[in-house]
Image (tube, rainbow, N blue to C red; front, side):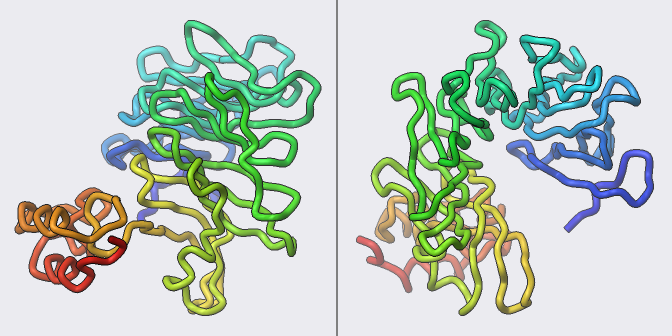
Length: 321
């Protein structure tokens, strides 16, 4: 855990909301100011004036585009920021309460919420496109796929997935009255978030068109200490392998952040089967560096592909096939 610093010092609360693909750029809110952080420049205040309080909620893959919201003329306004152009407001009306929550990998598509009109998708050529009917209840778009063609969020208390082809799709719940989608994989096929269960408890979910909505607590029960709970899934890696969120850790008896590796141990390509292809991949990568988060052959994430990783393939060979 590394402390990123603060804007203006003091003892106010800080939150990091998003990170670039290589982990070099972090964005969020320091006190009441939107920030962009790099190791070289430290904490950078993105607001144009002292009166613009707000937060940075999303960042492009290369870290060059940041989106979020600030108070401008006493109203929250969605912004898209670049180093060359500074802060650009996306709102199509001066009287709108509007915030941007997510941005595509290339920085060209922005998604968010208009308090009156609901979930939106924005591009420079098309402007703001609202995804739900006017007057149909609160909706918000929280995340967008790498190419900007799949949007996820919440509409009328249910998690949704939107594409231009399918339109707005209610992806259901875990039996309860509410669900929210917070993250989507690069290709738009996998969605994560949280849902109420039939008994009213909160649980993290993963959704695909093939499986529907799944309770992560149940799917990965074997990885959890008895009494531990995965309560929310807030983000997912581009390939759909890693899920991050918050839950209760029974071992420490406190709520903590978690990182879940959803692939079977020994599986290097995510096909669910540990076979010759995985053994060959590990042998070809033998001796190379890189943690398991970026190097799939490094199963124990010790920074190098070695004998221990070959052994993992052999011990799990045939699993899932």
